[in-house]
Image (cartoon, rainbow, N blue to C red; front, side):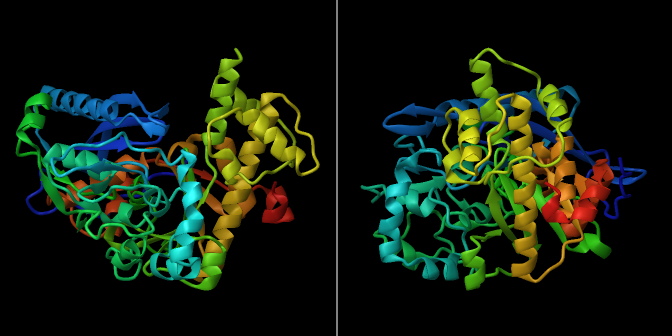
Length: 509
């Protein structure tokens, strides 16, 4: 384990040296948490401490003609979590300064003029939008779309989902974190990092691409106005305050509401040297792999490589590509459990680590793997298509998944460096995948680069730190916020193995 660097930032003038408390609502495609984040000064500098006060499951369900999110249940869990946060803070004599919300991207709920959700939001895993892709491209060719939005083509992008809708007059589309923020405060806004994932956002101007809305026959006011990370959305509605036990004066702060934007804000990169330019992997259900830039890359080569230019905190560009993620592993575990085989994850990983180097590699981000189904059989079928037979023992399937993810990470990082004309001296893996030692080592071997793994809770940390700065407790830019992360965490370090260094990145797997 590498030692944490001392923080080179301090509490802003007027900050609470005894500590300030913030709530991060952090919801992924399979689970959600409500987390208390404490920011306080210490002899080593400013540090953060996270306390999860409520966990709850999330997932898609088949109802009303498709795969949808049970948003009513989801929001009820959010309120339960806020009540738990109020109770936990009060028990320590603390007051909660603000709340921030981050979730996955692209999905939305439709709200009428009365503020009512007209239907449960569809999930991006529903295949309804696939049929709309060709219709959208008839009106807006792919080169024109990319030159404006800089967005990676994915068949479930918001633009394609909306093209399946009808009767949108009088309705507004609120992306999932914005929908939660609206129900908490009564204010309708679209946070910019998530807006940049819709396919209807101008990557250069940082505004809605209204000409695309018009070309597709979508209302010009379909989305609310934009709000930037760090701006105050509003304060809690009286009924929310009463139900949760929080003060009605509690602020809701716009953070990087796309969870990857918050996660990248908390990458513990340092100033100077190789760390000045870093690659990152936000590893969870999906893997988001790329580099941080100051300007978008909108070249034809970038479009051909299917890279995306999404907004980050402080106007940065998250230049990345979606790669398959740990969804493949969790779906395998779900299938095996249904068959009566329920090993612990560590047991599976230990068995996979004993297998010799090499083995089959699949394209982990193939759309073939998006929908829930018998994942072990789909992986074996994909391997058969390469002319190889994958043994049925789960250890071989797990090793194939991790080999494939690491190979995908290495390929994507190399492409990002080439297309953006940068060199990344180190790879930061954050999120749940940073705990997977085998995946981290395979990534170091595949990329030929040093890997820094952690923090696991990067998304919640980025969420909390943006809130702390917005409320005046912290000051400075991303460098200062990342210094707080370095002071608060002890990430693990992985060095490419000698075998990998000898064979090169392509031979590591």
